[in-house]
Image 1: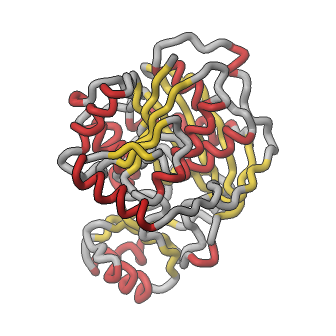
Image 2: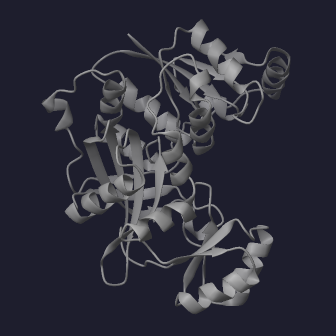
Length: 357
């Protein structure tokens, strides 16, 4: 039996991944780690563990202790911050992972550097300007016709993003985020919004699936209308998206390995352009889509990671085009006494981690 550790297990994406493994054609034992003492209760893994955050000095040692205790043979890393940390420290982890190279992850997690490479290699992408100071912002407004996006160079979920028409709004927004030197301005692409999830092995494309985002959760609460959390999506089959997304990955890594999730948007003329790549993990709403549509992409990923043959009947089980995903919040409500929460916090402080019953 495969024994898989899933990080960020109390978050929506990892819950989706866990659910996908539960519908796999074979039994898979799952251990979930979560650093948030409240969200750990959302985890649906067989064992759920309140563990240190990825920024903790004890993070790697605790993971290895959990790996040994539960005979874990594979880690799936879902949150971006943990992808970055475990990528850099992969040699210290006592079980296997299925991640792109360190260099590839570093590039993909830097939207400005990714954009520079795509422009250099003629991959369609929006015009982008680095914002190091006020003069850079003025140049951006001269170079890119408003409206334009200002957003953080690093981070997930549309971090720091705002669609602006006026220079004054952009300046105040970047000031608010203390973002000078960490922000970029990009061309606004007003058309369709797609996400492309793909699995590569040693340079070969094994499987891919595309969705079009139609609505976001809590969109009215976000100045940009984008929250990074898809509410409504539909499965699509767009050959131009497949080609551009694959080319975007290969522009950064000539021999891609692992999962790559590519975001694309249409420009005003209906041409798709790449906006970013999320390396080493699936898109959050894609995982819930896979689960509800009985799409076996995460299971294919696991089979490939274990160097097992994936049969054609499994590879062909893609989500039919035109299937609609409708999401609200993904977890059932949980109630518990405050004393139990306080106990867990104290127990982790004393013992580094605690198994949650």
